[in-house]
Image 1 (cartoon, helix red, strand yellow):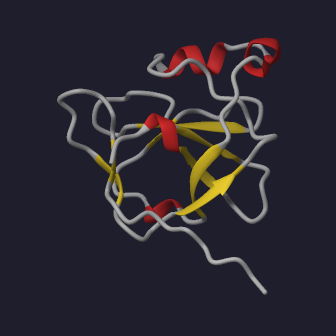
Image 2: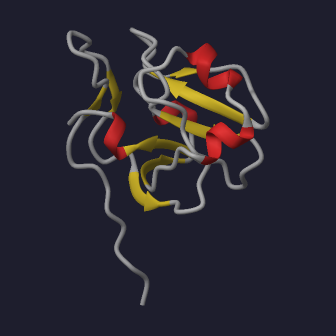
Image 3: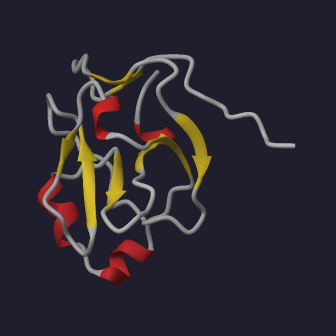
Length: 121
């Protein structure tokens, strides 16, 4: 028997104080765990900092639970960094707070992952 999917029941928004950007609307993303996922750089760092981290620095940073969408058009507002080592980091499209998640350009099927602890509801 297949497990029931858990989808977001609330709006997922940028966590920055004063920013009202909606990232995902209700029922658009599935909750998934990625224990061996790509580690995310320091929260709130400028996207340029995320692109400049070494593999050793990235290994120290780990997140586990994400909101998953398979189509970039499912996002309401999201920004993408330049590709660095096969990864594009996701940011708020309005205020550029980053990273809120990532997209591994090598993943099949495509996965766009927003960290549950880096957004507000």
